[in-house]
Length: 128
Image 1 (cartoon, one colour):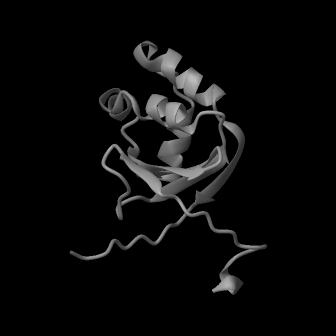
Image 2 (spheres, rainbow, N blue to C red):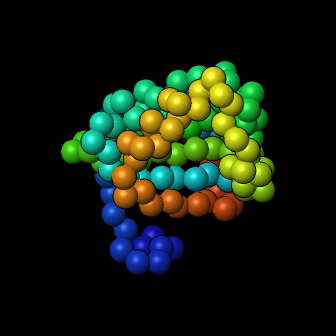
Image 3 (tube, helix red, strand yellow):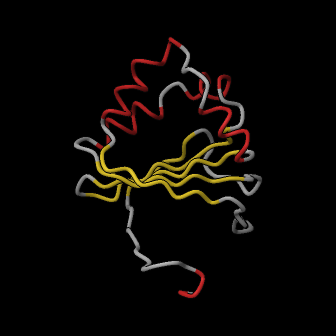
């Protein structure tokens, strides 16, 4: 499997995983994974996870996501979207005033962020 990756592969164990807006979805046409550090991962995730209904109204291309605390100030978030084009258009929109202050505080708590874009994800959930 290592041949499928460019560069060294690393793994993080995340004991604290929360679904956001219903979690991930096999229907996603684009997934953005973000990894970084924060002085307060719990506060950052609380801020970023608030206002799910308003986020869905403002950004209908967002299907859902996962917010993971990897310990020692490290975090990983995965955002599932309908398509990359829709995601890029949505990124250009201004955040609604009702949630702007909390969103901006959450962004200030994100340090050393790396983005990994999955342009054509193959997603298959376990069958129950």
